[in-house]
Image (cartoon, rainbow, N blue to C red):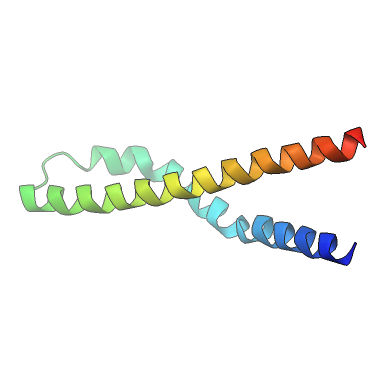
Length: 85
């Protein structure tokens, strides 16, 4: 049981560590429309810089989403096992 509870502690730590990123994500979402409007009229070098930065963010978000989706699916299977047994 102790090993199982250690895993639960790890899951709770993962979930709790997402609180600040969720706050930042909500703020970023709120500011996205204004950001997009300000993109018009940029110089080519400015555009290139922003493209690279945005692509990096998208890659990071995608990777984290994949990890979270994988964990969620595995936990659903674990929950199903617990509820069946």
